[in-house]
Length: 96
Image (tube, rainbow, N blue to C red; front, side, top):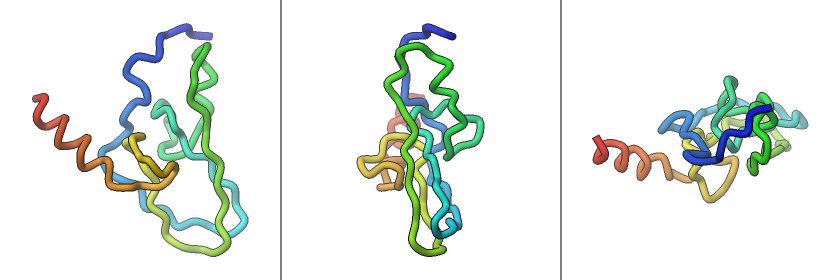
């Protein structure tokens, strides 16, 4: 188990949301740490780091529909995109 400090987390997976057609009744586990290889969904990568404060966010839906999942990990409405990636992208562009 790694003991890497949590600096730089959550990691920005992408500066755009993931549009996913969800199935009714299926449980989706959204990655909140940004370390998953299966973004925007959790692959339990957070469990490899001791003391990791991030956990997956589980959600189900009543009907089939397209849902926009956050991938920048800065959303105020997890697991859904709230447009925070636009600010993140702007800050990254300014940083160089």
